[in-house]
Image (cartoon, rainbow, N blue to C red; front, side):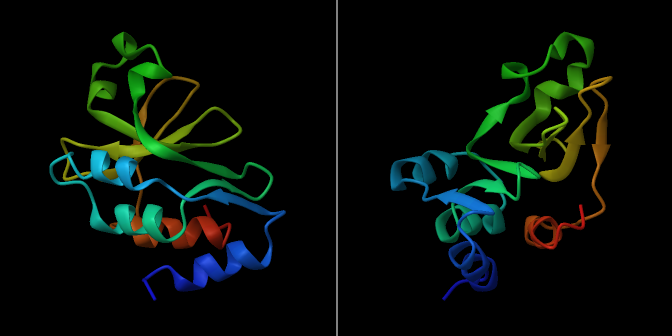
Length: 134
């Protein structure tokens, strides 16, 4: 089994709280086309998939989304370097800052600021999410 065995067990044990779907192989192949994409993120999508944690505590997208699809990036040009991987009910988003070694960041809906997360890996981040310690 993979590195997210414990999270997958949690998802399968409580499908009402964790509504996840599998990511298709063509989508995984498309994501692998991004240079320097984090392998632990790809592993998560392969093993666990995409969906909601809790009552939309955080929704993981099945693909990476350019910030411009959600936000007015002309208000913060650095958003053009952010690929979003999920969102919160508040309207804030989580993503990767591709110009900073694919570091994990939050985009605040209120002022479109980009805030670096303390987690150094996606694996560390996702474990906090599933512990609801975000």
